[in-house]
Image 1 (tube, one colour):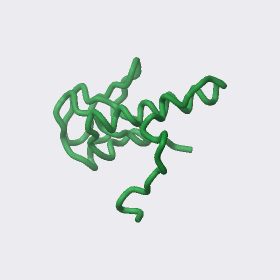
Image 2 (cartoon, rainbow, N blue to C red):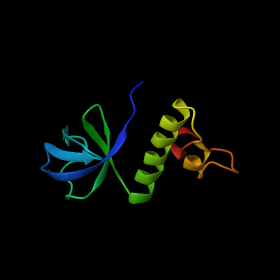
Image 3 (tube, one colour):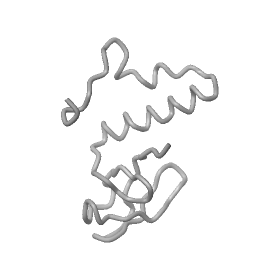
Image 4 (cartoon, rainbow, N blue to C red):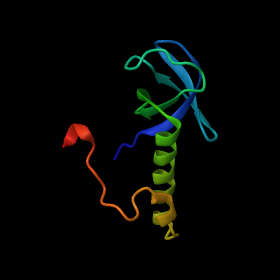
Length: 96
């Protein structure tokens, strides 16, 4: 399974950018979204930035990834899915 992860742009141009996530840095393609300012959060999938993220959405994705890691370790993970507790998950608009 391939999962996109939020990364923060350190430096780059319209072709590629050095991006960071926690202690990892990697060069990713920017061809799908164009040049972005340093500090911008992007969703990276298979070393390609596929879209720009706002801070809230990047946090939700990070929480979900941490929740999956906790579940795999047999630890409590419910708090990391707080946005889903007490509501039925909804399909994104483009899938409705």
